[in-house]
Length: 119
Image (cartoon, rainbow, N blue to C red):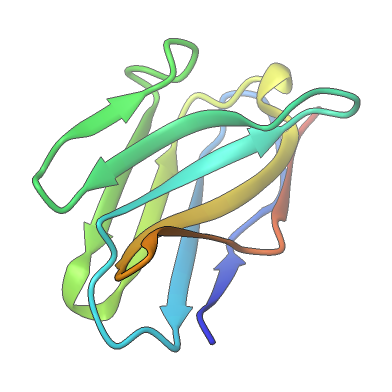
């Protein structure tokens, strides 16, 4: 049973930084992609950043230049370094991982970690 556990969320002032971590357990292989999504109250979950085993990385336009995603493939861990945080970054952040199975792509989610940017 694959489990993703996020950590590092919290309350930070505008302009501050936070680093989110996500550790995966229960997987016998590497994930084809790992990333971060966020969800605002009453809105759909949206992509923040994602990185693939092929080295491709994508970011939402709203976080480019401020957020950096990195991954330790050997440990099946993904990080999101967030700088210059804004109140509009306040959301529930979810870790995501995609795994290849004989039946197709399996998609896994963590329970989420709250990030609040407020003075």
